[in-house]
Image (cartoon, rainbow, N blue to C red; front, side, top):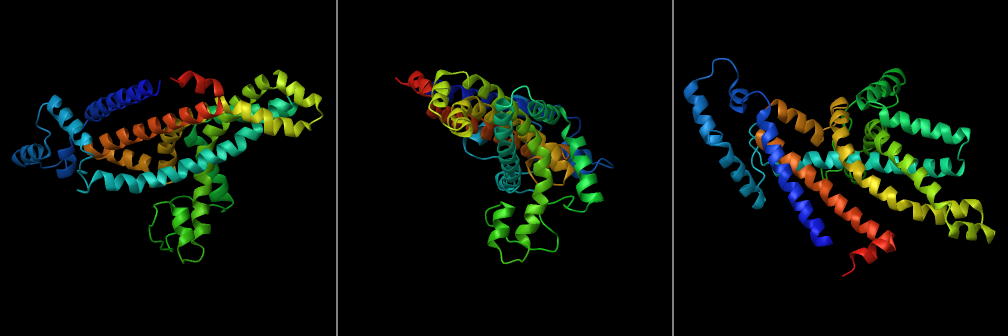
Length: 335
């Protein structure tokens, strides 16, 4: 079973490499034109740069070279900055990971209790209200929702900063790449508070995606579990309703919730592109958008493949977690 999953994961990543290689070359424009400027380009210099970058080779040969470099853990060098893509990726990925982890954690902390409470109060005004909020969060465009929060929280009330990860007057040495951790480790007064203040608004905007999905799935799964015999037996023993709901029912309802949390990771990374652009958050999403505009082929290719690898890896971990949570799954994968 696990061998088949690993083979599927490998085939998925191979397909992603082909799509990433092809899509970036379908974008109108020439990376050499961007490097040299579109006015007064010397044809000889243009041809020389194309040859140096290997862009004058057939596409099949370019793709095979790309795969060969990946197999040797070589992600290439940025055409714009002339630095290794791997080094740049980790700097930006740590920012995206911090934002996505905060949004996912916030979505889970709000979505799971909301789903449990809505299921416990099925058919009530509270149930309808919570599900209406979840539906609104699921269908609300992130960019529009972010602009509304910026206008309210930053412009009108002045509570949160508008952009960036840290105040420009503070200097925090990068240790882990996660600004909140680095700020906590630094001696700069007010650094942690500034890092958290910059993180709040993007997290709220991005957390609407996992909150809506987790709340709805938790409610559905809880309603299914509460009808089982063991729940009636626990209630017959006189256990408090909150204990039955939050300790016994919740654990059994978490199996589909864990699955949907894994599926949210891909949506978080795609939503992070808009969120990072809106809040000037220096993550992979904004880096990817800037690289597409510069026609920086190595950066775009490598970032897409690495993001896909992260999503596939997390899904494999969640499969293992589901196997641990559900004894039936353990029996199904047993030899």
